[in-house]
Image 1 (cartoon, rainbow, N blue to C red):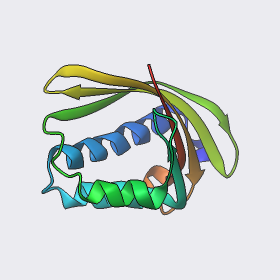
Image 2: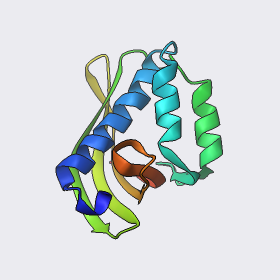
Image 3: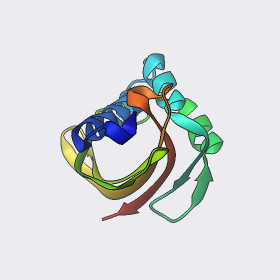
Length: 135
């Protein structure tokens, strides 16, 4: 249960989630990475992009299906994970997400994410909402 998880376990899940995303975006043959990424989200997932657009989860995840292999060499690192708040049902986190393409830093984002406690999710968590701010 996420309530008992420390920040290190939550940070590891956030990093693993972004590793799966980077794997799919850099290599379209890795269907397992896409499916693992898709299944990590709740049915009512939503994303606020760095441009302020609110995107429903189905649109985000459907768009990813055709985005495999479009960012060769992509690596995403996660740092400065902070648990802002937690309850029995959810964990609110903030972290820095840094994209690297062919080893060179690209976009950096400060991200706030709401993770739902769900035994079926990776590490007992599923992604409910993400808000990204470009830095």
